[in-house]
Image (cartoon, rainbow, N blue to C red; front, top):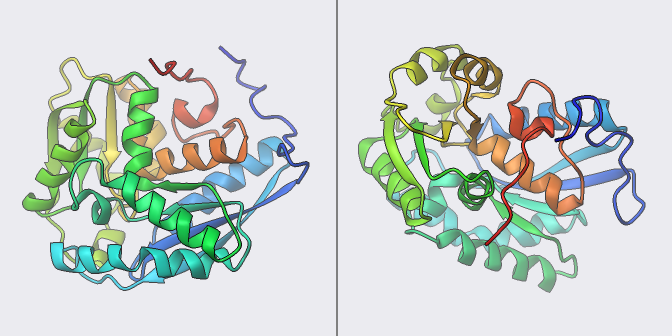
Length: 271
């Protein structure tokens, strides 16, 4: 296990660059992904000296309903082409439920569409989706049983549960906050999450997903909940950050966002 002050110090990317461009594809009504990710990467920069910039393409989404989510997914390739014009080093598709609503494993197809569109535009880049990042990060952590908090209506919360379980991870308990309007999701108070997490059945879980949505604010509560419960706590946003860092060849060195991003959590080797 790496010492707390060592992870990622003075990182330089494998290509020798000291600045990385991160492309985001976000719902038009998203107000959180472009605040939480830059804050986490600001902390990474302070620890390592490497800098990051963010470049976004937006797809229309106002209400978190199956019809609007499907329409957003259909625009993924167009958005990927647009954001790749900035010659980004990595692309993150930041709408977890839009992908998960398409059925278990759908992140693989969505990521392939985005990668192909960026390459066809002359700017190939590795791609991560928040849906894929969440399940892959849980797998890398060795989590076999989890509890989750979502902001979604019951139908979509059930879809997210089925998606996670389709990746071989049991969902012990889930609380859905039943908020349909995406702007309202972004106004939810992260300070309420510790009390919500305390209501979950956490018996035998390996990790807690404090926010299974990149629009639901959670960063301010991650470390507090992890310290209180003594188990790893992640969110869709922290998992996406973790995968972006790995795609760039950087070791996580982010304080105050849970052990996953601190550099203190050793991933489980793939079988």
